[in-house]
Amino acid sequence: MHSQSHHFSRRTLIQATATGLFATYLGLKADPAAAVTDLTAAQALQRLKDGNKRWVNNKLEHPDLTTTRLKEVAKGQNPFVAVLSCADSRVPSEIVFDQGLGDIFVTRVAGNFLDDNILGSLEFATSVLGAPLIVVMGHSRCGAVQAASKAVTEGTVFPGHLADFVDAIKPAVLSVKDQKGDLVDNAIKANVLRNVEKIKLARPIIAKLVDDNKVKVVGARYELDTGEVVFFE
Ligand SMILES: [Zn+2]
Image (cartoon, rainbow, N blue to C red):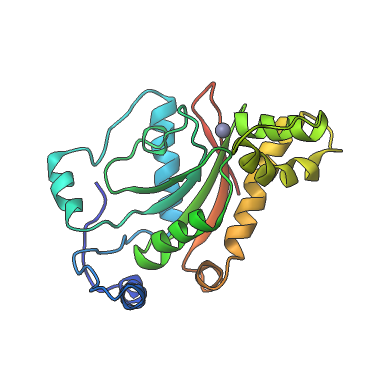
């Protein structure tokens, strides 16, 4: 269980200001019960690493899954991390990081790429809810990246809206097309790193939080076979 201290930290002030701004945009009153996490980005990252170690070693602790926690976070959320991951059914953040209710603000889309809706969600998680860390997590044998790779190497055309996520991932595939090694593996990493960079540079909100050292953005890859998350630091 992490600290639920509600003391007035620097981040609380920042969050209060951001919440106020957001509330002004919406014409709403800010939720006074929503306190931000006290964790730094480094501590948040360590918490994910510790949780993933428990998952890999089959030593789950299932934190924050009590009815006490349910009631606590019903009043307001203060997730310590925002994760952009693939919609793949085998990559659920709360399970692979052994976390519970109110811990992780999750955005998921096949191929874990950034679009404006995802970006807005990440801006909300950081500037309003106060999460100090964003993780972009790809995974081994990602079907979306495999499809984008086929579109590049074989000219495969995908029907309906499958073409939309394929198009979004294609630039990552093209960027590693001439590299040695496995094209899909290289593209999975390139896709993560491209989206990490896009998030870091996303003005006006996240770019400023990153510049001010209030938010860190890191990439990662989940291994379907072992359950291990490898961070690209
Ligand atoms: Zn995937």
